[in-house]
Length: 253
Ligand code: IPE
Ligand code: IPE
Ligand code: MG
Image 1 (tube, rainbow, N blue to C red):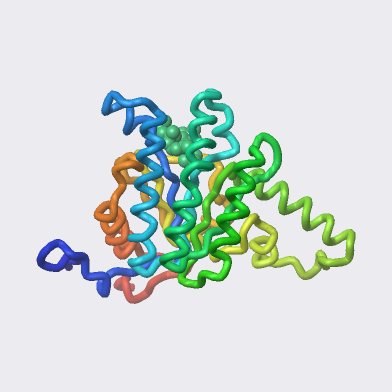
Image 2 (cartoon, helix red, strand yellow):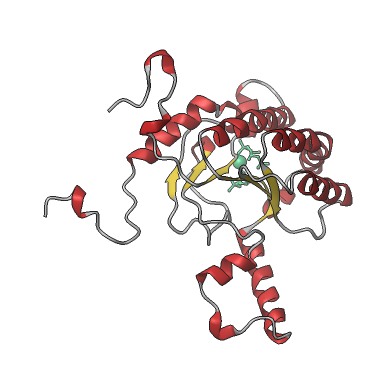
């Protein structure tokens, strides 16, 4: 079966569109290194690519897009690299938020807000969320100073507090309650992409990705364009999601 129409336009009617896509944006450094550029230039190009790619992803019909932009562990990197990434965020993020508002996408953030996150970063986060709060065409979830372990630790603490204050009855806790206490109460991830060929999750959305289809293209993030995303959707379309059951139509017995 061919998924591509004449003239290279993808025929989306033949494609299964995942509701929640998550992308681990990896490979900025190696992309730059291969071109004799600095790691900072790689991050700049990764950010430019994110701006372009976001619009395309929502055009395909995806409703929620989560991206791993900076992990709790990424603070281990050199001061120069961390400062560059923080400044890039402060300088460019409002432009990105404005663009999302134009296409009716709501911006939300997942991640710790405590030290070492700078106040000017928190201000941009708050401003961008406020700017797009009434948009209802889709949700863009930026994972920044994000770690799945941190998210779970904070969720357990909050549940404990709510239980003490009588806001949560421990006997009623179910899987949805857990989602509610994570940084954002989003639907489970259907399709998780990690660019750059690394085969690990690096502390990313471990609860939310429990039944996600995983895809590990070798392409570095700055080069992961609309055509690469469409290729990923074709791969997703071919997957048989069973969730522990059996698809009897696909078997002969
Ligand atoms: C991903 O690219 C961006 C961040 C983690 C901020 P990397 O910076 O990890 O790029 P590589 O893995 O070194 O190529
Ligand atoms: C994971 O990538 C974090 C982000 C993409 C933001 P890393 O490049 O930091 O992960 P490791 O160190 O290779 O596991
Ligand atoms: Mg990396």
